[in-house]
Every structure is written in structure tokens, then in C-alpha cells.
Amino acid sequence: MSELHNIVPSHLASASKSQKLIFFETLLCLSAADGVQDDDEIKFISDNAKINGIDIEELENHCDPDTILQDVQKIKNRALALELIREMCFLAHVDNELSDEEVLLIGRVGQAMGISMRKIEQISSWVVDHIVWLEQAKIIFEED
Image 1 (cartoon, rainbow, N blue to C red):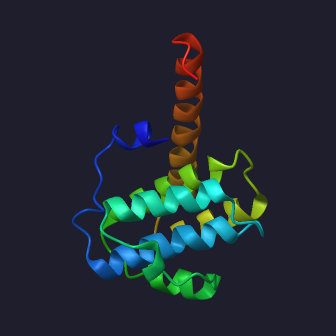
Image 2: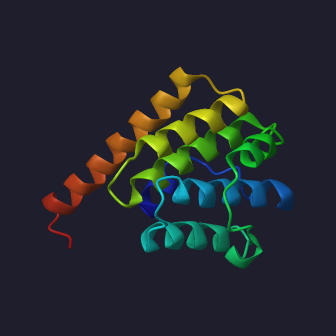
């Protein structure tokens, strides 16, 4: 999935440390939303956190959706908020099982940051389209 991250610019690098912690704690919460924290989901979060100067050990490994919904409201930069939704959509597809709980949390987080459901749906569709596109590329170019 890292190929997808090169398509659009990241605003996370210029975010404050507290915003980065909120960003990755939200992803951690999403990884637990369906009741199972998959190793691939944790790796996705850990790798991306490390790239952004955050050690996964710094993150609070618990999920209280009400706290997350309050915390994400501190992200005032719209581009960063949209990036969080994008990353949540990527993460929700890492284990190839998109649960109702994940969809609900993505929607609630987006709305808490002032993002319309229409925009969230556009981002989700874009992510799915690009995942399909990359899988097709692997087949076409005979990559394992």
C-alpha cells in the first residue's frame, strides 16, 4: 500500500507532535474497531508512525471512541483531516475485511472533523479504486 502514499502529498510531516499522536492513536483505535488487531494492521500503523517520528510505544493502546472523537476535533487543518480519513480507509482494507464497525468509526471521525459523508465516501472510493489498480498491476507485470 505504500505506493498509494506517493500519489498525493502528505501533510502529516508538518503536523505538531500532539496532532501526530492523535492521528496514530485514531488509527490504532480503528485497528481494534472490529474486535481484532491484525498483525498487518499494527505493522501498517507502526511503519507509518516511524516514518513520521512517532514510536508506536508512545501511543495509548486503548480505544475509547468518545475520547478519539474529542481528540480529532483538535485537528483544524482540513488537509490533515482528509489525510487521516484516507489513512483510515487504507488501514480498514489492510486485512481485506471491511467491517461495519470500521465504516462507522471512519464516518464518526470524519464528521467530528467537519468532513461531509459525501467527501468520506469519495475518499473511500478513491482508496478502493487504487487498491484494485495496484492489484491489477501486480497481475499484469507478474509481480508476486
